[in-house]
Amino acid sequence: ICQEENTLRELRIFLRDICAKLARNKQFFMFTKPVDVEEVPDYLDIIKEPMDLETLMSKIDKHSYICARDFLDDIDLIVRNALEYNPDKSAEDKHIRHRACSLRDKAYAFIKAEMDSDFEDTCRDIREKR
Ligand SMILES: CC(=O)c1csc(NC(=O)C2C[NH2+]C2)n1
Image (tube, rainbow, N blue to C red; front, side, top):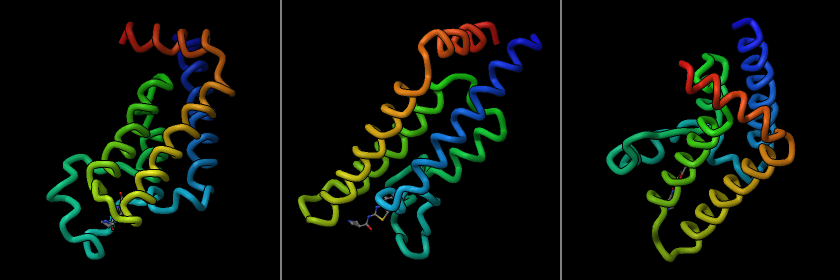
């Protein structure tokens, strides 16, 4: 069990680094904090499960993720929300959709580049046993 805690600690360090890199990227500023309903009043009428990079970071600290797959599921949620809320042909909507797809590709590339697959397999085994 102590070995499992070591693995999950390493996962958290790894995910914090990726989340910080994504949040530092100016391209993704609109995904870094919860949408302000003062500025976008109808957002919560359309998006039922908001997600953002700051919330992702706090979930890491709350030990919400025990494998990279769970983390990427929340990245996918950020992207899905952006595509749903910005469906129009307008340049502004297209721009936000493009940035959302770029966020997903960057996140998956960081995980693939920096995580060896047997580490993720070990995390999946821990998840199965819980
Ligand atoms: C985070 C997110 O997806 C977001 C924040 S504002 C926004 N969209 C707009 O403000 C308008 C452009 N068409 C609606 N999307």
